[in-house]
Length: 173
Ligand code: K1U
Ligand code: ZN
Image 1 (cartoon, rainbow, N blue to C red):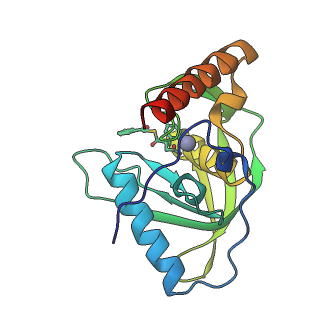
Image 2 (cartoon, helix red, strand yellow):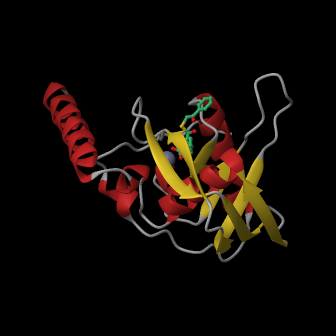
């Protein structure tokens, strides 16, 4: 297993639409293992493959609390089959937009179809943080970031801040 670099705003790769996974082979299993190591190391509760620069429709997640055993979950080619009219608001963060948190309103419940790490078809009903995290990560697979769900003004401010930081880092390199 290896830690991979998490790409950050304003990296244009975050806007790519990721490609469906065809074969679940050794290379994909290595990617999944590396994503878990990277996600736990960050630390984060979810990660989409594009956040480590790989445009494949793969998500890792672990919503276990600190005092609970790990609960690693993998979602390959996830698709939202249904979402509720009811909405829920959570303060979201993103490992690609570090130290920025904002409230986002999304459907409170979703039904998602996906392949597990053995390639078996699964369906799951999610609510609470699970539903929010699944939608946040599926957005990543479509090149959408949580800041796309906040006001234009707040989004412009955060993009400007990260663009400035990237320019400074480039000048210092
Ligand atoms: O996709 C990502 O960038 C990961 C992101 C997932 C997420 C968080 C909150 C709401 C929706 C989706 C994160 O994991 S940010 C870090 C975080 O939330 C966290 C980190 C350590 C402990 C607990 C939470
Ligand atoms: Zn994110």
